[in-house]
Amino acid sequence: MGTINSALYNASNALGVLGQAFNVVENNISNANTPEYADQTASFEPMPFDPGRLPGGVEAGPLISSRNEYLEQAVRSQQTALGYASQRAGDLGQVQSSFSLTSTNGIDTALNNFFNSFSQLSVSPNDTVNRQAVLDAANSVAQSFQTAAGAIVQVSTNVVSQTNGVVSQINDLAAKIAELNQAYESNPDAADDPSLDAQLHSDLLQLAGLANYSLIKNDQGGYNVFIGGQTALVIGGTAKAISADNSSNQTAIFDANGGDITSQITGGQLGALIVEQNTTLPGYLDSLNTLAQNFADTINEQLSQGVDQNGNTPLTPLFSYDAAGGAAATLTVNDLTPDQIAAASAGAPGGNGNAVAMAQLANMPEINGATFTQFFGNLGSTIGNDVAGAQSDQQQAQAQLTQAQSEVANASGVDLNAEAARLLQYQQNYDAVGKLVSVLDGLTQTLINMVNGTA
Image (spheres, rainbow, N blue to C red):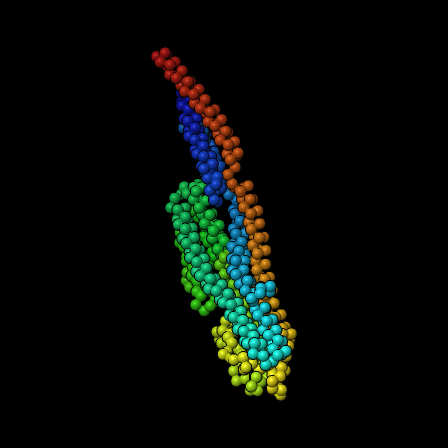
C-alpha cells in the first residue's frame, strides 16, 4: 500500500510539474513579439531515490534560457556602430548643402561672379553700372561666407543640445538597469524571470546605440556596466551618472566623481557627437575662416595698389572682418560708393590696370598652392567624403546589425511551430501520467476493498 501511495504521490507531482511546463510554453507564445525576449524551456530533474521515504519522482528544474550572450554582444556592437554612423551622417549632411560645388548661390558661384565682375569692369572701367556690379558681387561673397559659417555653427549648436540629451538618456537607462539589478539582488527567483531578463537586455541594447561600454555579469544575474569600457556606470543596484560640459565650445564628458572620460567614449551617438564638436566641425570652420581671411586680405591688398575713379588711393578696404569672431562669419563689405573702386593702376588713372589684375586673381594659387575656388572645392570634397563615408558606414552597420539580429532570433527567438510541438509533447506526457494516476487510484480502491473484505 505504501508503494502505491508513493507512486500516486509522484504521479500527482509530475502532473504539477507538467502544468508548470505548460505555463512556460504559454509564456513563450505570449511574448513571441516582445523585444529582447528569449525563448525559455522547462527543465525536469529527478528526485533522489530514498527507500525510507519516497522512491524518486520528478520535480521542476530551473528554466533554461536560449539566450546566447555571445550573439547578444554582437548585436550590441553593431548597434553601437550604427548609432555612431547614423549620428554623423545626419549631422554632417546638414553642413554639406552649404558647401555644394554645384549650387548656384554658394561660395563657389559667388567667388566666380566676383572675379567676373572685375573682368567686366576692365572692359569699361568708368562705367557706373559695372562698378556697382562689383559691390553687389562683393556683398554676395560676404553673404555666402556668412551663410556657410552659420550652417556650421548651427549644427554645432544642435550637437551641444543633442549631447546633453544623449547624456540624459544614458543616465536614465543606467538608473533602469540599476533598478533591475536590485530586483535580481532582492529576489532569488528573479534569475528565472524571463520578463525581467528581456527588459534588462532591451535597456542594454538601447544603451549600446548611445555609447560604447563593457559588461560584467554579477553573481545575482544582473550586470555591471562600464561606459567607455573603463568607467563604472552601473555597479549592482547603483547607477553612477555621467555629465557633459560644453562651456569651452569643446565637449567634455565627466564621470560621477568629476573625472574626465571624454577619450573613452568612442562609439554610439555620444562618441560621434564628441568627435563632431571637438574635431570635425571646428576643422571645417577653420578651413572656411582661412579661405575667407586669405580672400579678403588678398583682395584688399590688390585694391590698395590701384586708384579709384577720382585718381585717389583707396582709404577704406573693400572687405573687413573680425578674426577673433571668425573671418567667415564676420566678413562684410565696407560702405563704398561705385566711384571708390580702384579699377585703375596707380600710374594710369582712369584706366583698367588694377581691374585686370583683380580678375587675374581668380586663377592665381593664392592659398596653400590653390586658387580660392580650388581651396573651397577641396573643402567641399572633404565634407562630401565625410558624409559619404558616414552614410556608407551607416548602411554597412545596418546590414550587419540585421544579420546579427537574425542570428539571435534563430538562436533564442520564439518559434511558434517548435512551441506547438513542445506543447503536444507535454500534453501526451500529461495524458500518460493522468492515466497512471487513474490506474493507481483504481489499484488503491481495489486494495481498500480487499482489506475491507478480509476484515
